[in-house]
Amino acid sequence: MKLLLDVGNSRIKWGIFDNSQWLAEGVMATSEAGRLAGICAPIDDIDAIVGANVAGQDLSRLIDSTLSERGKPRWIKSSKACCGVVNLYDNPAQLGVDRWAALIAARSLRDAACLVVTAGTATTADVLDQHGVFQGGLIFPGDALMRSALAERTAQLPLANGSFVATPRNTADAIASGCLNAQLGAVERMFELIADRPSAICLLNGGGAASLEKRLRIPTLRVDNLVLKGLAIIAADSDDEPGSTSE
Image (cartoon, rainbow, N blue to C red; front, side, top):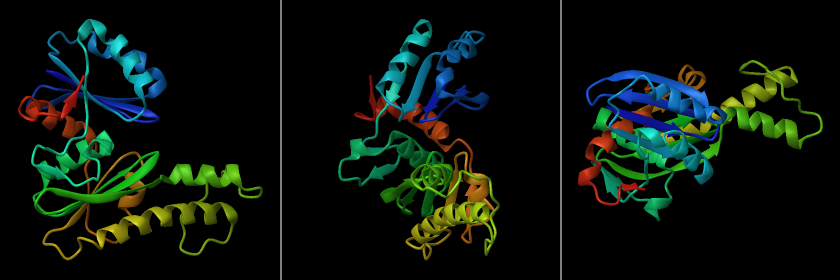
């Protein structure tokens, strides 16, 4: 039985996996990390805690302390190759571990070329070819971050809840439509790199996936919790993959 942790900048996603099925999943704000001990309390047979953290070492240390009675978490690190995926990043260890885990999950789900998109605080769009080689990808502000940046850095553009429309005729709608169109355009432009490959698809996950899914003009499949799924694969394989884990 494994406790898997996807520690992001604003949220922690967690899952209990028994090597064949998910027994429980949930999400909490990073400020609620102390609740993890309570989640583990009723489960006696957790034999490993495996996580991906992009929120900094302070949070890793807090979670280590919170879960100390259940064992020391193993914090996954990106590597040059793992679980059938090859990493062509200039410095493979520099690739965000959440992106790495999502790519590994994507490869387990599809043997065709994929654009792996995670829409969260930041949005990432990563190209995985049909051979399982990560070719590279983008990082750009997520929809909510774009909106807040406009509100903070301009004098007359409010943080407003507008609607997505083709031709906005008020400022709130113009902001909402502009920021979402920027997301859609970046994703569709990246998909052009693999659009001619057989069965190519865009795999979507993250808190902003729903708003993208219904508006993208490319083949899409929404797969929630790609990072947790990737962590489950890495955890099962990590003993055979030198350099894929740390701590």
